[in-house]
Each structure stands twice: as structure tokens, then as C-alpha cells.
Image (cartoon, rainbow, N blue to C red; front, side, top):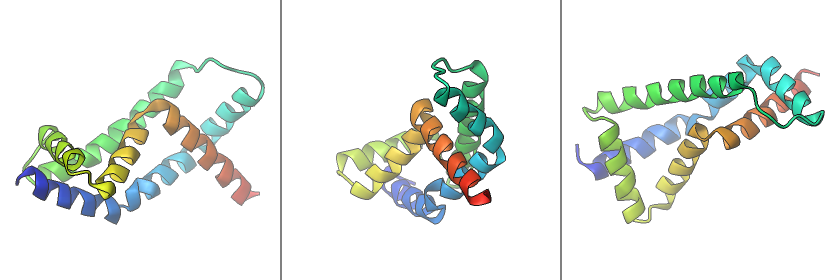
Length: 129
């Protein structure tokens, strides 16, 4: 499978997964107490972020990467093929792929991930009230 074909499959898969929104929301809900405590910590003036926060993020990233690797393996390729597909998207200025790439990068980047999780946990708490 060449990079362009993989990119088409990757985008289809990504959108079928609703941009992984379901998994992100489920993770936030499973760890809602953790994120509520983190939010309270920030609201009380806390600035440093304990190691267990980054460990939780790494667990999430590992879960996401596992899903991505399963997708790639089912198509007979690897992360190298994935990188080639993304390079192809950037070369072609593919707007749909740009959104997908931004979402994937925000999942793997700690700061945006934490902000998203804090927001989702707050929304969950509000729903439950």
C-alpha cells in the first residue's frame, strides 16, 4: 500500500472513529476524580505538575498509539508508512488531513491534552449535578 492509499484509509478510519472523541471522553470519564483534583489544584494556585499527571498522559498516549499500530498492521504497514502518509498529506496541502494531524498531535502533546481532559471532566461533573 503506497502512502497516498494509506492516507485515504487513515482519514476514513479517523473520521469513522469520530476523531477519537469517544475514546477521549471515555478516558476523561474514567479518570474524572483525578482531573477534578487537578483542576482544584490549579484553582488554588498550584503550578507544578506532579509526575503521576504525565504518567497518566503516557498511559493515554500508549492506548492511542496501540490503536494506531493495530490499524497500520491490518494494512501491512508500520509507523514509518504512517509518517510517509502524513508527509504526503503535507506535500499535497490536504486540509482534511491537516485537521486529523492536528488532533493526533494534540492527543500526544501533554499541555493540550491536559486542558482537554480538565474541560471534559468539568463538563462531566456538571452533567452529573
